[in-house]
Image (spheres, rainbow over the protein chains, first blue to last red):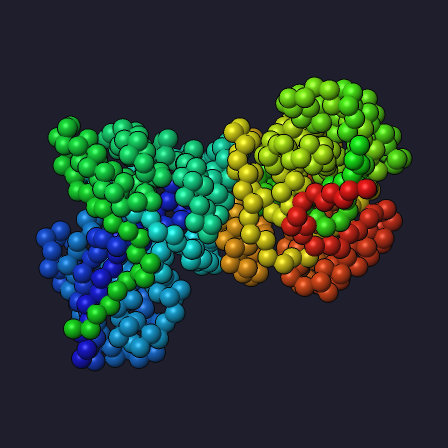
Amino acid sequence: MKKIQVLAPATIANLVCGFDILGLALDAPNDNMEIQLRNTPGITITHSDAFGLPTEPTQNVAGVAVQALLDAYPNKNIGVDIVIDKIIKPGSGLGSSAASAAGAVAGVNYLLDHFFTKEALVQFAMYGEKLASGVKHADNIAPCIYGGITLIKSIFPLDIVALHVPKLYVTVVHPQIEVKTSDARQILKKEVALKDAIKQWGNIAGLVAGLYKEDYELISRSLEDVLIEPIRSILIPCFDEIKKAAINCGALGGGISGSGPSIFMLSKEAITAQQVQLRMQEIYTKIGLQHYTYCTTINTNGIQINEL
Amino acid sequence: MKKIQVLAPATIANLVCGFDILGLALDAPNDNMEIQLRNTPGITITHSDAFGLPTEPTQNVAGVAVQALLDAYPNKNIGVDIVIDKIIKPGSGLGSSAASAAGAVAGVNYLLDHFFTKEALVQFAMYGEKLASGVKHADNIAPCIYGGITLIKSIFPLDIVALHVPKLYVTVVHPQIEVKTSDARQILKKEVALKDAIKQWGNIAGLVAGLYKEDYELISRSLEDVLIEPIRSILIPCFDEIKKAAINCGALGGGISGSGPSIFMLSKEAITAQQVQLRMQEIYTKIGLQHYTYCTTINTNGIQINEL
């Protein structure tokens, strides 16, 4: 049987003002998976990394996502063997669980001659997110599968819109602390002031228009989150200092990746993104906090598949 | 001295999900003004219509707007004579006061060889809105001056973004009832549920993307206001019936124009817009409510000036 390599990209959800609706895919890091079909039912999962994630398919995000796909596939005599080399660190806020789930279903669908649509793949992969966080959400899954910057206009019914993506450099820092998604969600207020909501949707409209117009000034002016960031950023060490330093380097703006703890910054030029990376390293090194940084671009193709 | 005719278009503010931030200009109706400079200070305002609006410049929206402009102009020996033939009915929710204020300053600026930028004209015209409603707002002024569909991302500082405008037909019905802007504002809740705000900004992002992609299906799916319309529409007779009838005719969607009482609907085809107009007329005629309808397109040029 044919064997493939699947590269599933890290993603940034809750893109500043686009809380719960905007996400983007990164060119790095990527999870690396090997997938092969077989003519007997069942799913096996093997990890070649050291994160100690569950291998029981019903307890693994890739496992439940692939099971959802197989349940919808007419031929019931097909099984799947998956080997995962996880590169995107779990708990980083960079869509680690989404990469496993989306990568697995995209890979299996490739081996099934693209039987399912991308939208169906998002539906299957969301079972992985439900296992990981208790909630079906697509703000990492959608950009992982579609690439680029995606608007998740609605989950029920699923309504995904791929947006125009101008050239952008992305710098990410992942400080080695744990922010539980459930905690990050719990500290949010259930009600917000109408005037703040209006400011937020003015920024979202400006950001979307800025992407289409390739107007970097407008993108920069719109990268402002008046609702979520002021609350969640207190969970992340040196957030304000890093953001300020990045803007001083010339970054367009940025914020919390997903529900944290990673912080990302967008820049128009590669040199700016590299300077931002240096400043991030300096700030966390100064306080002795272990961290990883990535200086990358937006992945406009989504999941990449190579035949082995 | 040179004399000009100024045609200042009606405008629709609070464009469905774009409460307080999105407005558009209509090809009809237009206020009709005649403006002439003179070499002695002072402003005179004459009305050739029968609405009985104030002619004292400090009490007239065009008067205060032009005064703000003259205050910023170096030559203090200039005066302005304005004759207004108001066609856009005051209190219609179609930007009647904005048309007077914006038309007057745009006309004077034309006669001053475009001394001021469009942005400055918006600033001056907002003094008219402040006189009319107590609040400086630009959601009618900006589309009146810029034409097309405008995003008013922020008022302080002023940040206006002209959006891409695909071909759209607009049907408007103005039922002859009074909805005071202050009442319409007062019944709004000051706090909204975060989940509703998220839905609203998903729709705004979808609408802006839909305009750029010229994706009429996406525009239609995004023309939904979950926050303001459910509250304000109770002030407008037959709102739900008219909206439902318009959608049944094939309209893309629509809502309350400004703070009402006018209702507008967007359509992709002229024939649909005309059918919507007929249905609006039938519904209000059935209950004996006097009304005016307009079946028009989006004015992409803003204020039109002709030399006399």
